[in-house]
Image (cartoon, rainbow, N blue to C red; front, side, top):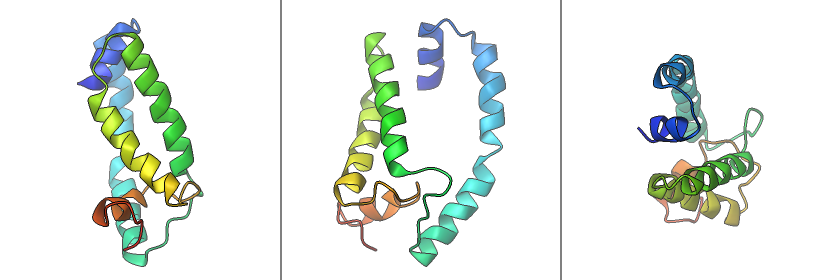
Length: 110
């Protein structure tokens, strides 16, 4: 719903966003399986994307949302976890790493 609110504020029609989001949804099964394997192995390669790049992207989303008066609380909460992972030294790790940050209250260890 947040994506639809932001898209609307940016002049993007709901159907256009839906067409794009449907393609993104197709990526989730592989990503979930890969994340499960990384969490099990306690190995988080940053070869596809990194926590640091996620921080940059989510910061942009937060700034854009708030500039339109859209509640960014969900994004801000996610960014807090990302920021903890970076503070723990995991900025170059892959996006499954924050699962361990959540499990240990910010220590980043399993």
